[in-house]
Amino acid sequence: MKIELMKENDIQACSVILQKAYEQAPYNEVFELGVAEGHIKSKYGSENKNSFVALDDENEILGFIIVSEDVWVGGKQAVIEEFAVDSIVQHQGVGRSLMEHTRNHLKENGFVSMVLWATKDKRLVDFYTQQGFSVSENSVVMFGKL
Image (tube, rainbow, N blue to C red; front, side):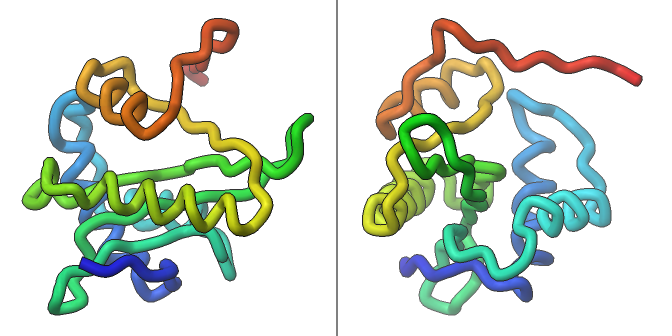
């Protein structure tokens, strides 16, 4: 497995992975491919220098992480916009490798913190905790219907 900078022409393959990931628990959502692709495009933006794909030996995408840059009180903050691994290769170290590579890249480029939003699912919370994240005690994500 190798990890490379995500390119715009990776968006479609990443959209398929995202669609498959959201069909599984804990989400169980129907994320149509056209909508998934639009979501990935909007999160990736253009000329993103902090997002990566994990590739197998045949250069097929196994997973991806999309990171945007923000500035917060302590300095540059990375916002993990989307992170998914193909269901076929989950629990094989792809996500861990992507996160480790991304963390090293961010440190080398002057970022001081990372933030992400995750579903309250023990499996996800455990994974992110193992990656150095902690559950915020003073923040909550809120949604409203229009």
